Amino acid sequence: MSAPRYFIRTYGCQMNERDSEILAGQLEQLGYRPAKDETAADLVVVNTCAVRHSAESHAFGYIGGLKELKDQRRGLRIAVAGCMAQEPETVAWLRRHAPHVDLVFGTHNLHRLPELLERAEAAGEMVVDVWDSAGEVQEHLPSRRRAGRRAFVNVIYGCDKFCTFCIVPYTRGRERSRRPEAVLEEVRALAAEGFSDVTLLGQNVNSYGHDLDPAADLADLLTAAAAVPGIRWVRYLTSHPKDFSSRLIAAIAGDPRITRHLHLPVQSGSTPVLKRMNRKYTAEQYRDLVARIRAAIPDVVLTTDIIVGFPGETEADFAATLDLVRDLRFDAAFTFLYSARAGTPAARWEAREPVPNPVKKARLNRLMELQYAISLEANQAWVGRQEVVLVEGVSRKNPGVWSARTRDNKVVLLDRDPGVELADRFVPVRITGARTFYLTGEVAGAPLDDPLPPRDVALPLA
Image (cartoon, rainbow, N blue to C red):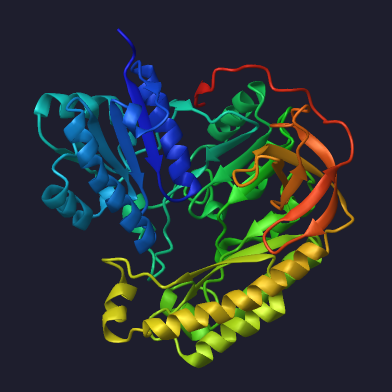
């Protein structure tokens, strides 16, 4: 009898991607094997994201579409997990519109997947098991890592900031840090398996360690992770401006193994809007922080997030955002129309003082036009440089091109010689051209590492 097959559809951030690896690891311990897609699976897990309306809409559409597949294959089991499952509105929608779903569970009890599947199998109807709050951080969970050199490592879960637009504290819970020794044990295990580019993850990663006794610090953790033999680069996501310390700046500046890419969401350039967002800093304080970072790390690659059309945003508020973007000249900005999240304070304000959709869209277009010009200019400054890149694989859009990434998160496209295998290799390159969203380059030497040996990518977490 062949092993049962599973397929996981993941929406959202890197934290969700990491959760899906842990879900996959548990399933493989139960004897499941991965399926190429949902049509070949005996179990489909939909790992959802609640940060924006668009992600929710895509997930709802996908879940609804699975009904036809289940009608054709009566043995198929469907589970819905992730941040949307933490929302009562989602559970109510699933009960009304998706009775073909067998299991619903949230972010706080994903480690109990084997037990939950057993319950769902016995129940014969939808099982909903969503915890309101998280317990202790769970260690030693199995994990099915993606093949390659890059790996995600969770260091802190949840968020205590309660920005008025954000659902994350409600779906992910309060901040809970892993012990430094547990994180470093995992990094050492990854290095032993050939992973050499690790990303330390948290919804607010630079709050790491404040909740521990004794307290720990992200600056020390980054330095220790970078010192693990076999680790070439260490990255980290995502930072909150309020918690970005001088010690962290010094740690990044002092160690070339730590990425110079800093994603520092500003959200708005208007201090009144930032106050309503509960961001806990002013536009001037953000500018001062960027000045201190650039003084210590002149080659920093700075990216950000910006919300357009937050409830009550005036033309003057938006003009302040444009001014900040012109002055700080981000390498890239991820720009979004405000999306109301049920249960947040800003969702209530949206009902009273919404920015009209045509105004929102016009403002977003103006912001994108400005930022795209700045991004192109920033990328043009890289032309002629010698860099080391990690080749991630063949470009999805052009099979004749390798897609690679620098330590500082710049995407570099390289012409591909079919006779030379460069996937998952660190390669010296010369940057030859620039576009708005990527660089082009040419290989400038032999790979700096040996090819990866075959490995079982189902690794235990430390």
